[in-house]
Length: 147
Figure 1: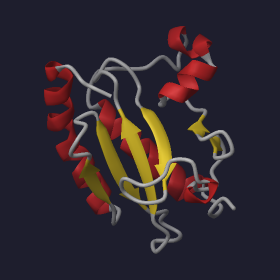
Figure 2: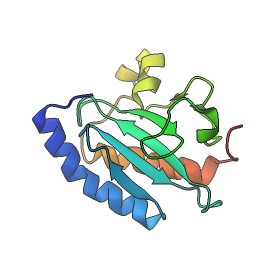
Figure 3: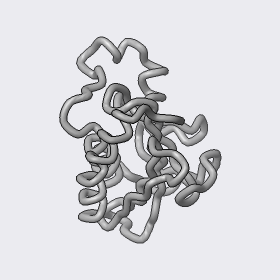
């Protein structure tokens, strides 16, 4: 995906707080060198700190729209492997999407969310919101690695 310059600069600025959040939880933020709209979030659930997950977060525009969020086998890895996905309600590894109102995929499945209380909020730091939501779900609703 290619970002406009304003989106790219906004995303770079907000990535700093996102990196700090991930570091607090033992994770890391990796920028995609060939695509300024794509970042890899290396994360682990609090209950299983040795279990690494790699979320690919890809923005088409920032902060105006939610990102695509998928799990990969590693940073830069395959996005079509079900065992790369954590088992969390709302995460759908068999169709490779997260059906929740913080992902592009969720809003595509539920267009009614666009005008409801779940509507995307482009204020504050949406990148930090996405990362903190993923971390919270891993910490509170995780039940293992999908097989």
